[in-house]
Image 1 (tube, rainbow, N blue to C red):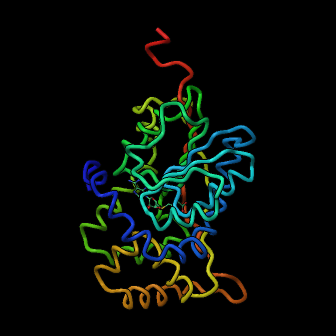
Image 2 (image 1 turned 90 degrees about the vertical axis):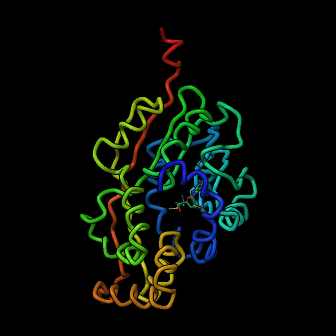
Image 3 (image 1 turned 30 degrees about the horizontal axis):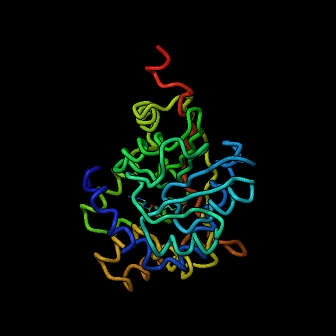
Length: 273
Ligand SMILES: C[S@@+](CC[C@H](N)C(=O)[O-])C[C@H]1O[C@@H](n2cnc3c(N)ncnc32)[C@H](O)[C@@H]1O
């Protein structure tokens, strides 16, 4: 999908991401807590920070940022995920909307985060993040890293049951993790002090059936389900997970995730002249 098409399509995102919002919120998102904690720590999120989480999903990262003292806002394209995010964060300003046209005025936030929410197909969202950050504001992003080289690559493999064009788009989406790509993009959108960081990331599941149910609650799984049907998707996912079962331990899929830290400059290049 081209960036323009990705922007035009934001209203259909809920079809895939919202259809199993409760499963996603309760069974999938908690496994992401390692990356939330690591990025909040590196950004030194704390008292007095006004923080926006972009593509906030069901709002667990917002809940954790609030626990550190931040005043939080969030935006996501899926109304059904935003309903969960609001339930978890009654004190936060969580909105349904497109991250390419955010409904906040310039310089509203000290910190912006996005956890696997900005993609190679959605780079222009970085311009919006730049706009809503104060000069000197901090940015932390995570993106999928080298998935094939990850010990837990098997856990994402069922997404390849989607139609070929969708699988090709998924590959384009994850391009931001490649060496130099995210750095170049962030610099192009005016960010400075760009740093790449390691992000701890591991999904855990009690058994293959639970793994298949959890995976089916995600947006890319919906693309595969549209192609092969839900029963076939769930059966195939559970079957391939069986070989990863370990006696007395959870199924665990460690996946390479890349983090980027950056800042909006204190002064614009023009002002600095
Ligand atoms: C991989 S999920 C990440 C969700 C959340 N950050 C997390 O950590 O679980 C991607 C999210 O991006 C949202 N999304 C996709 N396109 C969007 C857009 N144009 N504007 C806002 N949110 C969008 C989806 O609804 C979904 O919640």
